[in-house]
Picture 1 (tube, one colour):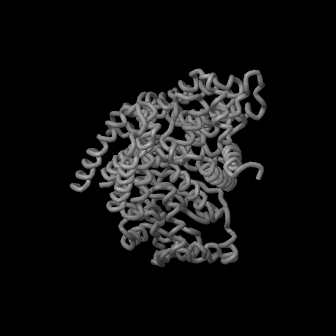
Picture 2 (cartoon, rainbow over the protein chains, first blue to last red; picture 1 turned 90 degrees about the vertical axis):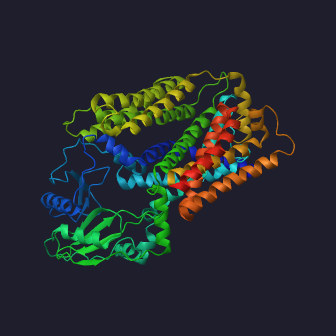
Picture 3 (tube, rainbow over the protein chains, first blue to last red; picture 1 turned 135 degrees about the horizontal axis):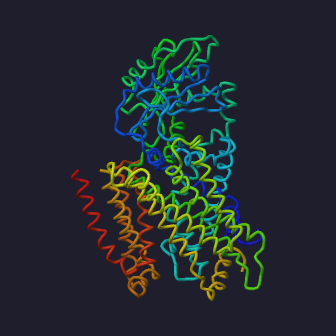
Length: 515
Length: 115
């Protein structure tokens, strides 16, 4: 080791954080938004009427009728039943488990396609959080790799940080920029450190069976499904018979499942091999209040509708792994705790963003030196990501309100607006001087967020009407817009040059950048 | 009721973390204009620990051993952020905020016991 442990760790922290920082920023921001996935989806489909009760058995039969027309030869169906915040049934179907996966949102009253506007709602941000709009498996590998590096960055960051407790509350705004950035990075990182470690580790565990399938594939050669039944993840079902069969009506099975299941509401019905003589029907229920992400299930024989069983009780290992997933998704969190999780997520994004800025600030050329290509590249990617992604999300919300309702491929155009604005800010970051790019990119994102409630009021109606349904969403938009406007203002203020050199030495002493 | 317990957690954590911060010379100077007087640091830290552990105890008593710690850690982060923001933008407010946090904690405790 050339230098001390702490110096090596500082080097590792700076570089590991840098190479995955841009992806991680996007993962943190969209993941944090996903704590309010259902609220975002509800906002993006304002025409849906809430509070109408449907008998789940009837809805299941209507959806099954739709699926029997649309996908009679499918390998599997899944019917999501209407819930309070999303009162439609969603039919999913696929030929094989390798995909492609199709879905259609259905009016629970008629079983025909829902007339609500075509959008992917909060689901898009949620999937982006772990798939980055890439092909699902590729995206998950990329995000998983970055999460692994984040774990390295977190631990090396803890080792690097000399005064975790003494500096816990220290944010020296008045000092030179570099010092303030380091303080902000430390405060955001340390205050929510338990969250950062938890969310990174549980995120990796969530996808661990995909990253490391070899244990199960060695133990259950060719019969990987048995791994899931034996670990209590799903009930025992039969392999397809290869002969055609007729699926019995789902209504009675749904009613029997509700009678047999615990007190939580039914969430959906899965049908394996719907046209096969060995078709199986599994009713899924919401997880009971608890840490573990375990859905109670009740299984039936598809052709006769006879009850076949429930999943076996999960062993301690399966229970622990589902508890990790539960902790990551935080479905158990009530409204106040959810706000705290949201806050922690924002602190995570802020830690990554301040870290990225810090990398460039610690390497700003001395007077007379030229900005090297590497530094310029990092600067551009920083603005492009940290200002560009929020601008893209605001554009996604605005497009939802502004695009014509009957536009063909509307959901895709909304996503186009998301990437379009993001790309615009990134391109502008290449063309404009660095400081101006920060100011303008952040100001644009702020304006777009502030425009969301106005456009919402102009297109859908006052946030105070309709039982103030969207008041909270619109208020949060204003708050985010305000925060970004503040950041734009800060980025525009002139650096106190006199202190820059001392702060640079300060940072170099702690292992960041060069003196 | 959970929101009230979160309010109790937040106010106790805020009180505890603020006392911890005041036991450090740098922040004591920000708030009172002078270093921590001799013999004051220990009681401040002790008070801080009592409030923070009291918050954990309250969370675990009401929410159980699995959700209690989660809620407590969340409250520590939220309260810590508030302490940092007050210290760096309006340090003089911290002494009032510390005194206000105790009645807040008592009020949320009373209300949560009632409901």
